[in-house]
Length: 270
Length: 289
Image (cartoon, rainbow over all chains, first blue to last red; front, side):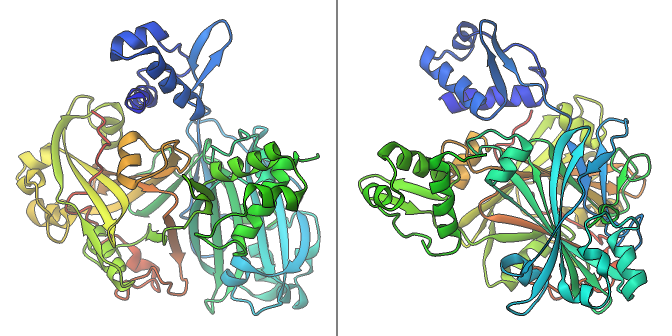
């Protein structure tokens, strides 16, 4: 019973009937409306609190949590390489205001490839990879954690900037193109959802009980020989992020690189 | 930043689960063994186990103990699928069977309703316009994998696409049917992917834990006609414990999710020939009217 009440209230919140920031009906009103006992109504409200939909303000009552407009990241881009389009992710704001993301200087590490990294980059056991990790913010809000992995042999072939900490200004794809002639011709994204790890909980300031999951997006980029040369793992909290994919002809809308801040992930020191 | 003791224990156990040292379905060491091993108090060990339960990694079976949760074999949905195939649903069925698995879709449940705010806005219709919805439950090898609902503007039925309001599968997909019947062609689509807690219907259908700790993906797919007018809206929910998404852009090597007919080699073939949220696409419980 309490779940039905909770679901009904959740729908009212999601469709705006109970607006963001507005006060929830009192316990008495809810008991009346749903013809339910005090305990049932309390359980329903407790469930909404756990889901982060409402919050109790001491001495004032229960209110619908004010939601931040979600960041929408476009996963489809131009497969042909180039700093401004290829392999880039476009961030689209629901509002027309332009929000420029900022990133920390990459933290560069050299490590042995294992698990997903080894699998996606198709490397033999014991191969070494360079990782470049960044924290990314929008208007000061933690937005994503992003780590790109490159096979060490790219460095050995002369792409020394990969192991230097400063951002690679022209973008790594353009850099690898001019330096080594490696051209990106396509990429594959894999999208999963999982509970956050501890460092992610801390960075994104997520509730401690792990109830807000994170998206994990694995992007593998391929060169002309269809060989993977880069894996980017990005983690985004699900409470403030959505993704968009476009296939074929779709009308320009809020979701389009044109009028909005196009973020070339490759340009930001990956 | 010192981590509380129980979190350190939970993290250690989590790594042992993920590395396979504690395999899926195996019993966790008892409370006493854990206290011994980590030199921790009973409460600390309990908090650690509770934390792992929150993360969905272990579960308690009454009278038996605590066990590592067995993962359902994940299904990978390709968002860019439908190339060279007649539609999404046929593409979906062909991928499932290529994997040696069996897809079963329920007979669509048809509803006619007034479009509320969200659906009206997505379909670019005035609020209160009539829409047809086709709901469908989708299972793979008997396990519930997704719930799907597709909404169509009523005008399509008025123009002659009467099969949209018949409670049976539309062979080769609704989008292809619309093209053949009305000459209305879908030329592209846009997906939006979100995550939220499951509602009561979804929790029951997917057999998710009561506390809502396993979220669902909710995808909104809008298909467009040549004029740029939205043709349909498909809302699909997928529990996150058994679903993943993949998307290919440009030239990438063939992957397991790519059906043999569909050429990922040629980006131009990626145009959505006809993408049918066929036979209904249902999404039970997503009653948004």
